[in-house]
Image (cartoon, rainbow, N blue to C red):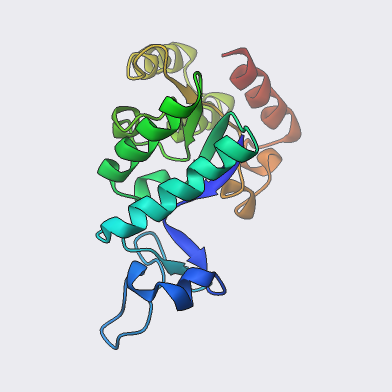
Length: 192
């Protein structure tokens, strides 16, 4: 599975000079950086209102499927890209290869409608932190049942006790109150 970032590029990406119109721009005309969930000044924000960008992005996505024969993408910040783009792009990718897998780093359930097979389940981590911290097992079980019902079969949600975003805040041992709490959360997550 390849890691794909669709909403932004590096500042030294060839598109910056060859296709500056594919990027969002600030009032002064300079290329903008993402600001929706904080300011990411180290990258440039793509503009998905530019339909020609869609074709270029879809061609790039298809390249790795055709040339390297990958079996899926893990899409970073997937909800930061238009839903209609994902529907079109994922449709094309799944036509290329049976069983092609799409994982959205997003906990928005609408991503299932876009064609993603798996989405992140950040709520699971919050529930596990509560449970390991002394929360009610029956409350957790009730929440889990309802959460599972939100993933249309055969689609599913991805559980985790840490990821690259969380790792910048604290270690699992600190987040789950102890090394044993982190291990208990991992065992619970792996078992589910």
